[in-house]
Amino acid sequence: MNKLMKWLPVFLLGVGLATGPSAMAATAWVSVPSTPDSSGKVTITGGDLTTGSAVTVQIVDPNGTTTSQVEAVTTDGTLKVEFLPGMPGGYHVTVLDQGGKVIGKGTFGYIK
Image (cartoon, rainbow, N blue to C red; front, side, top):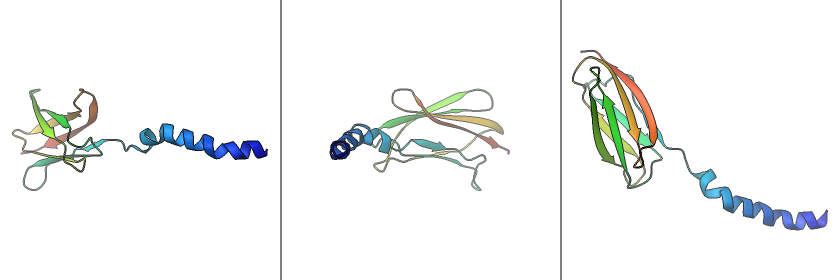
């Protein structure tokens, strides 16, 4: 039993070092409000993103037309994109990382 207790901290330290960075990394998130604010804008936000990276924000309007724009993630790992819808109806938002992996999605409705 003493031998086990002697090596247990070393083992646990090794496991912690091996899994620590990935286990401690926060999961990136995206938030899309369900409706525009009082000024008519929709503010898409995100957090826990890779600092200094570029993300692509895709917005599909009610006619099915996709608008894409590349946005830089701030130094604190956040994203803020304002969008002014042009027509009433439902919109779909997708945010992708530099590799094309979906970070988050959302929808909002606009009534004129």
